[in-house]
Amino acid sequence: MADGRGGGAAGGWLSRERIVASAGYNRWRIPPAALAIHLCIGMAYGFSVFWLPMTHLIVGAPACGGGFLSEMTDRACNWTPPSLTPIFATFIAVLGLSAAVFGGWVERVGPRRSGVIAALCWGGGLLIAALGVRLHLLWIVFLGAGLIGGVGQGLGYITPVSTLIRWFPDRRGMATGFAIMGYGGGALIGSPLAVWLMARLAHGGAPGVAGAFASLGLIYAVFMLGGALGFRLPPQSPGAAQGAGDDHLPANAAWRTPQFWLLWVVLFANVTAGIALLAMASPMLQEVFGARLLGLSAAASLTAAQKAALAASAAGLVGLISLFNSLGRLFWASVSDRLGRKATYAVFFILGALLYAALPVLGHLGLAFAFVAAVCIILSMYGGGFSTLPAYIADVFGDRFVGAIHGRVITAWSAAGVVGPALIAGLRQAQLDAGATKARVYDGTLYLMAGLMILGLICNLFVRPLVGRSSSHVEPVAADGPAGAAEGGAGSGLGLVGALAWFAVAAPFLIGLFIAVQKAAKLF
Image (cartoon, rainbow, N blue to C red; front, side, top):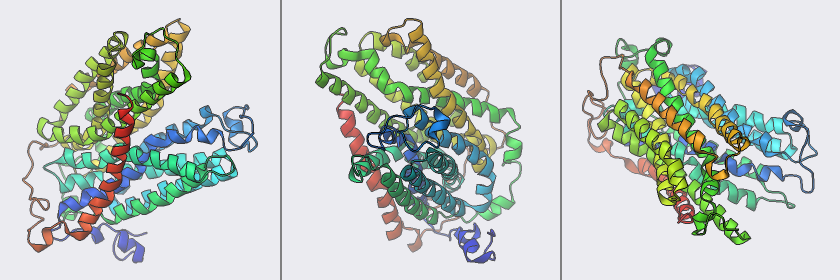
């Protein structure tokens, strides 16, 4: 498929040259396109809703007992959770690897073509996963959701980044915060939808997992294709691409600098600690506070109804931290436009270290509200670290190759996605083997997370810009487009299409927020 107009109908339709905006194009039409993609791939955070139903697909069949490799092809037994949860680790690992491998290609071909392929991979991957569930072949589920879906995740994640930064050079953080907020909020929409679909499409006593996968695959493919079609490049982009020089460090040069690896460790530290807390938040709340969460003494025996109430409170915490994870992405990224990216990350690490170290103390004192508040603040900064990163990269290396560099830096996320859950599981078991009570089993892990924050803070102190400009020195931008690109007038309004695009992404997101708030209310 050629990059230019002469490369055939599809090549011309998807090419960079075809999507350069005319003067007066309103830049606020671009964020909905980014949100459309990230709200779909953000379902990655909600995949845990499938694990339990996928262990009951064959009514009356026993659980598989032959181990992970045996379950890949065994069609006569029910899959087990230890064999299903690696699907998440697979597509997070593939996300980082595909973003690193294809980041430069995304920059060359533009956001429309990469967005279309991301839609086909993520939506198509879920359709293949549906086939795997229908045939009861776990290896097909891994192929679809894990490998092919992971490529869609990686392409979809980095596709909007450089485009948004070029449209909003004065608000780099806020612009990327819009898109990456969608990734954090995707589970707020997708999780309840998936639960509803599995119940609605259940058959013969078995949950409708295959139908849910297929339905989500089609919905996401259509929604993401709409987002891809909505991308436009600012008018100066082709000239800027040709004029890249000292103010734009290419990805192949950037990754050889100490600054690249400092940013890599900064992201790795923040994400490892955050993923570990995400993985243990619900069981930690129940085990640390137990009956005290219901206003009873710690030694009180719980009835079945009280245990259900405790589980509902823990589910409320999951909804609450999902809310803070999503909204924190836009909040902290916007803050970074005024405070600066380096200073914002310093806040993450200093405040994070203090809060991680305080969590064991708050738990032992029985201060549940303060404990939950600390967890929510930490998870808002976890999300904020993702959304602030692309603008930080642009500040350090310039914005011309930010998509390619960003793709390589987020391999730290892939590494953290493997290390974080394994770390928490290993340390928890070690504490139990050493005789620690359940109320104190997380103390060592939380103190280690505080240590990771200090490591991130030290690396962040040494980050220096390698180009002659930063987010503190940008050209003023007109309300309707990049400097010099928009002339105002009748064509500068958002228009009916732009308004509908905003409605299409805002409506499901607000519904997801409402559901999350309802769940969080159970905590109190």
